[in-house]
Amino acid sequence: MKNIASKNTFFLDMPTISAAPDASALVKGNSLHPDLIGVVAFYQMPYGVLVNAQFRGLPTITEKGPSHFLGFHIHENGNCSENAGHDFANTGNHYNPDNFQHPNHRGDLPPLLNCNGYAWQSFLTNSFTIPEILGRSVIVHAHPDDFMTQPSGDSGAKIACGIIE
Image 1: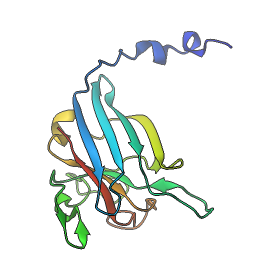
Image 2 (image 1 turned 90 degrees about the vertical axis):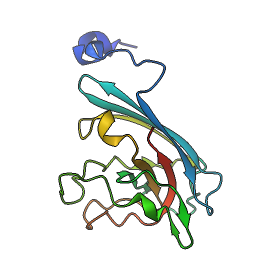
Image 3 (image 1 turned 45 degrees about the vertical axis):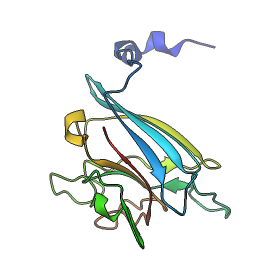
Image 4 (image 1 turned 120 degrees about the vertical axis):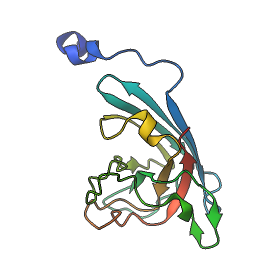
């Protein structure tokens, strides 16, 4: 197998990730998804923020369809309390300090790909800095984000929440 890193200096310029993230969120499912748990780690990099997310216990998808994606966002408020009939309603809307249309909110993240109840993803973004998101929440939604519907992509119920610390 060829070593592609030696031909692409981008990989060589990336600093080593420290063992401890600069911020993280322990994400837990609502009462309908008690086994859903995840960790989202945030690392400040010279190019932006590296986000590493891992989940297990995501809802089982039984029907064959075009997508096994779930909406994944940073929301305004770091309050994961559950209200009867409105799970995680106190998280507010997507983090959107610039008042842009969806999907250009700073809190819009790439959707999670649900693979038999598990998801893992890592990406780099310059949409926010660590200090901007501390105290806010990470939300997993029940449905895919359609990237069109205002204000939140019609991604359905909030099924898991974690506070960024």
